[in-house]
Image (cartoon, rainbow, N blue to C red; front, side, top):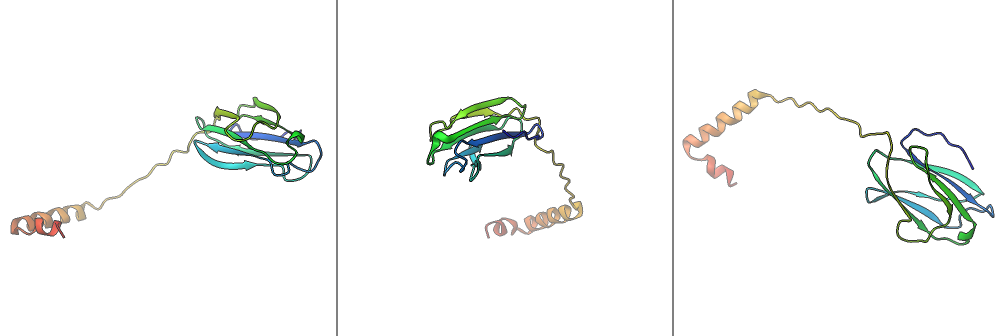
Length: 144
């Protein structure tokens, strides 16, 4: 097993294959808030590690896709707090075998946006509309 240090935002998977030839087509699809965002797989060798960053409150689903020789597969998944939430062999394929609401300490970045409005232009447009109303053609222009 590898020991990988990530910030408290990441789910980490430690993957093993007892024969040493990778997972032979098997993989884990990770979905966040209903959208698939990562595929974890061990393409070759006997061990590997991967991770995925999440934000606090994200709903994270893990689904297994079967390959050849699933009996050779073991893995561990650790949540952002460092707690191991899965430790075992290949689960049943198909629907999520594990769902968790992320306890990551990471939160979305706050973005401040400033708009500048030229009030001279706003007033000019308002005055133009008022003049068009006076001559009776503003309503006709709105229908164009």
